[in-house]
Length: 178
Length: 178
Image (cartoon, rainbow over all chains, first blue to last red; front, side, top):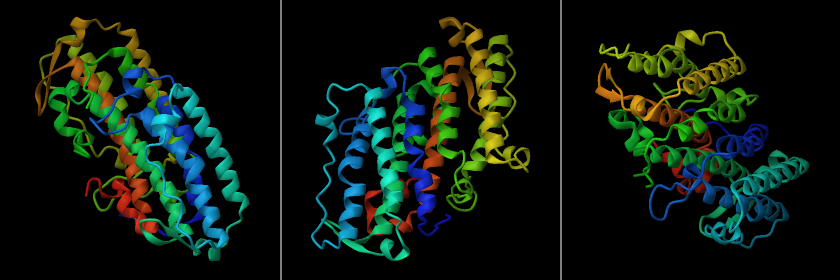
């Protein structure tokens, strides 16, 4: 494992690529892939994009501002089910475009804050986890993006689990999160 | 889980998006991300692209032709370490461009074969797995792509495992394949 320290430029380099990555993966794909899940209570790629949109609106930048303001009250809890009502009636292309626009704005905002090393060490109160720093929040933003990219790939892959026949033993992704 | 039957158009829709997906993820990223691994004996994103290139050259289309030819001898075994010599001295951008070009040609070839349902049921001999069908080979091509997209995301995510601090308990990707 190559654990490295948080670096703002490296983090931004990932954050500014996520919407293009997900759009390349999903835009124009047949519905079979977009609506697939890993089973009851799990999310489809469509659900994931709605969740990412909700994060852009209520989580990463609002919590960054909260920490920078010195507010010692806990962050607003994040709603993990908001996408089930907020995405209603919208196509996957609409959701991907909304995510791209919000992410572009949020990365611009993040860069305009000109964060110093001292800013990155500032602390806020997470409603469940307690004390967290700004650099931990921003590292989490990056890992959260990557977690959901992997989730989309895994969910799509499992759709063809049986179709691969004897090869399924070689394809470890079919057994992840079981 | 939404296991579905193999469908050639659905499979092509994924295959033709993989190189754009991986290029959007990786091209221009700082080396920290490109050379990260999950620990000894695991692959970096750079290694993965070399492996995908080798598959385009020696695996998917050659094996498709082998099955269609009716040849009952086993397929040539696939070399899982070819990328360590073949990628030497090449930049990630060069590798991404090579993969994009090979994949574009291979998808064109696949479509030009005008495969029928009867073709998809034709069988070949895998050197370890025994009898496999053409549809299983093509489903495996799709799942193999998605497995490696997820691997790239997971490998990058683990680089920031410690940097996320108390949030790491929420980020399941940090514990996948441990």
